[in-house]
Amino acid sequence: MLDPAEHVSEPAPGRACGACTLCCKVYDVPSLEKPAGTWCRHCKPGRGCGIHETRPTHCRSFHCLWMTQAWLGPEWKPDRAKMVLSVDPATQFLFVQVDPGVPNAWRGAPYYGHLKQWASGAVARGRHVVVFLNKSATVILPDRDVPLGPLGPGDRIVTSGPASGPVFEIRRAAA
Ligand code: SF4
Ligand code: SF4
Image (cartoon, rainbow, N blue to C red; front, top):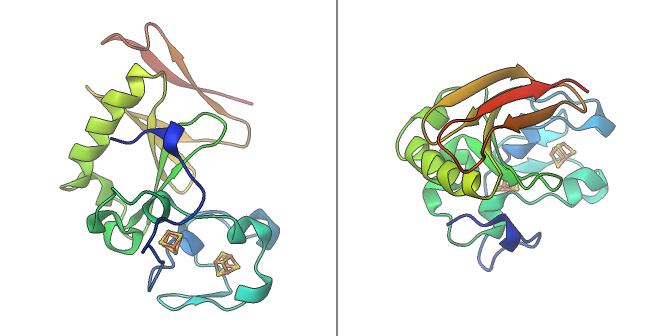
């Protein structure tokens, strides 16, 4: 069970990026003016970072959830899943950043079933599972998926209604 309270920032024993470099594609890196969804100009896909010793702090401190959570199976390794999991430190929402080269990866088995299962647990805690395709967000709820469109800097995902109940609304609140 995914519990953000147990989120750690160090790699789990035995976990290593290996040939995966997907985080160097799917996220934006402001200090490099790299937009989400395009390879970083320093990345050697499948091999690693071309400026490893001098890479930005932003890159240095990042470990995806597959790296830190030993219970996530091999199917969740980002270069196999074609998506990168992380926990948003501000909201404790689970963010799923999908490789735009395989935009429907999250809809396939076994991933969609897991996302739905995690969404049920997250809603009970007032949190959400959010799939991103570049900046475009879709909130996964136990009973439906809610596409919100692109989220800008400072935009928030707002829930109204009883978060633990079966009926509530999700919307984007502009910054
Ligand atoms: S997505 Fe995770 S496993 Fe892949 S390179 Fe980044 S930190 Fe390593
Ligand atoms: S600087 Fe290196 S670690 Fe950072 S996004 Fe680019 S290739 Fe990846």
